Picture 1 (tube, rainbow, N blue to C red):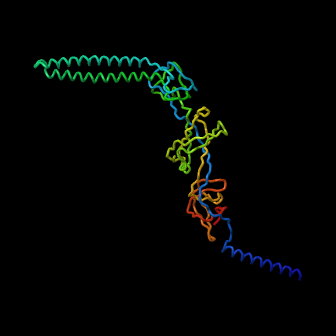
Picture 2: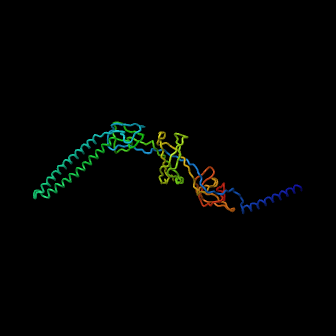
Picture 3: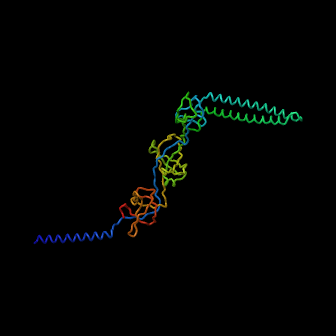
Amino acid sequence: MKKLNINFVFAVILSACTQEKKETDKTDSKVVVMNYPAIKIEKGGLQTSIKLPAQLAAFEEVNIFPKVNAYVKTMEVEIGDRVSKGTIIMKLEAPELEQAVLASKEKYLRTRTELQIDKEHSMRLLEASRTEGAISPYDLSTANAKVLSDSILSNAEKANWDMQKSMLDYLNVRAPFDGVVTERNVHPGALVNASSKDKPMLQIKQTAYLRLQVDVPEALAAQLHTNDSISFFTSAYPGRKNVGLISRKSNDINPQLRSERIEIDVMNRDNSLAPGMYADVIVESRGNPTAFVVPKSAVVISTERKYVIVTANGLRKKVDVLTKNESVDNIEVFGLLNLGDSVIIRATDEIK
């Protein structure tokens, strides 16, 4: 009997617990009560530093190819030599070109002599024509036409002679600007061809003045202006801070990289830097004053969208946003938000 009572009591307790659980589940299915910590959004940009890869390039560089077919006579420079603008860096020789200059000169002198003779003949006919009936008008006009024709021919031969002399001047190769010889591919006695563009005879780069080229994301590029100060570090001199000013902006967005090319002029008086060096550029972003600032954990990024969860009066809604500058804890967002809205601090895609 005692055992039966114990079983009965246990059955009653179990039934009561089951009934209570059903009622709780029923209540929970109607109203889900769950609190999520929220924070009011603030307005104002975040000032951050962004590191971008960049490369140093020569301010000016040129590959020197032959203008005429010739042989290399002498080389005046070697790799690493510094040259000044206008100095002769190599000499070529082309006997055929020299003969062509002499031939064009002879043709010009001959046409000039013929022109002088025709002018003298025309003047004599003109004097004789003053005597009525001595010279026919046809002979006089023919003589004048001959003078004009010879004058045109003489001018043409003079132009050809000047052109040949200019071609002859290409045999003396001169430095186009102050710089350093960085490449040499020919030696004395080599035949160089004007039609060959495979390898240059010489390459010269200006190294006292360099360009630092960096591709800046379009959102950040809009905040940068000419003469803004930029800091950068090179792999060759770690820890050494270099400073330059923005000199040029391309004003063109690369459609593949979504970035804008910016150049910083760098003085290299001690020649410690070299074209081709890799550099890390530190860009200071002042932030967008119209942006809203929220904790980074408040932004949910899924495969379909990027949003924050705004809560008000016990209701929650997802608001799509764009993100820009970010710090260690906070991030700038843009969207259909209002100052004073509260967003869930630790938002997840599972929050309904």
